[in-house]
Image 1 (tube, rainbow, N blue to C red):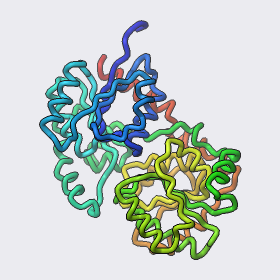
Image 2: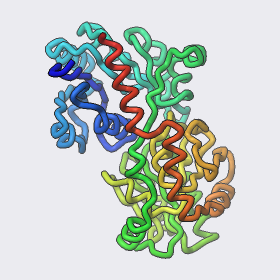
Image 3: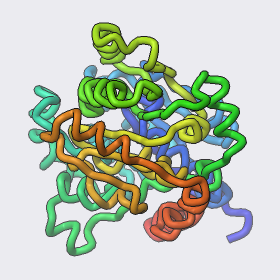
Length: 372
C-alpha cells in the first residue's frame, strides 16, 4: 500500500570485508526496491567494512556485534537487536555457522529465519572442515527457510532430496551485467595504467585463503611463463596467505611478472585488462567472480571442483586438480576470445538468469510473501 514503511530485513554476516558473499548481498541491496524492502546489517565488530558509507547512504542501519568466538555475548547482542527492532525476517549468511545467529533469531521471535549457504568444504581446511561437518546438521534446527547460491551448495548443506523437491530457494549470485560487460576503451586504459600493453594477462580475483589455491595457481603460471615470456599474472585481493604467496613468487623468480593488486572496489575494470581468468579452487559454492568474468567475455579455466552450474560460455574450460600445472598452462594458453565475442557475452549470462535487476525483483517477492 502507498505510504507503507518498507519491510526491514536483518542481514547477518560474520565479517563484512571484500569477499564474494558481501559482494552478492550488496548487489541485491543496490538493486532492491528500497521503498518496499530495506536491508539492515548485523556484523562482527572486527570487520574491515568497506561498505559502511554505501550502506548508510542507501538507508541501512548497521549493528556491530561481539566476535562470534565470544558466543554468549554475541548471542545476547544479536537477540537484543532483533527484539528491539522487531525484525520479522532475519537472513543469515554464515553457512555452517548459521546455527548461532538462527538460534538468536529464534529466541528473538523472528517469524522468518533464513539459513543461506554460500559454500562447501575440503579436507585441506583442516579443523574448519571438521567444524563445518559438525555444525551442518544443526543449521536446520532453527531455520524456517533454506537458501543456497546454487544447486551444489544447496545439496551440501540441506541434502539432495531437499533440493530436488524444491525445498531450497536458489538466490543466484547475479551481477550488474552492464557494469561488467566488455569495454575496449576501459581495457586500453587499465592495461596502460598497469603496464600490461601487449601482454598476455592471466587474471584471478579472490581472497588469499586456502580454498582459492593460490600456491597451485602460481605453479600454473610458472608453466605459462616458461611457454610465453610475454605472460603476466594479475592477482586481485588480500588475505592471510598473501605474504606466503609473495614468498613463493619471489622464490620462483616471477616477482617482476606477477602483479599483487590488492583489494579493489572496481574489479569490473580489472577483468577488462585480462585475457583469460583462472580459478583453480579446492572448492566453491558458486563463485560470483566466474559470473563477472564471463559477463566480460573472458575465457575461464577453472577447477572441476566448481559446479558446472557456473558455465555460461563455450569458452569455459574445467580441469581436474589432479592435472599437472603444465596441462593447466596449456589450456590457459589456448584461451582466445575475439573482441566481438567478448562484447556479446553478457547477453548469454543475462539470459541464464544472472542479471541482478530481475533477480532482485524475485527476492523482493519472496520477502513480501513471507509476511503477508
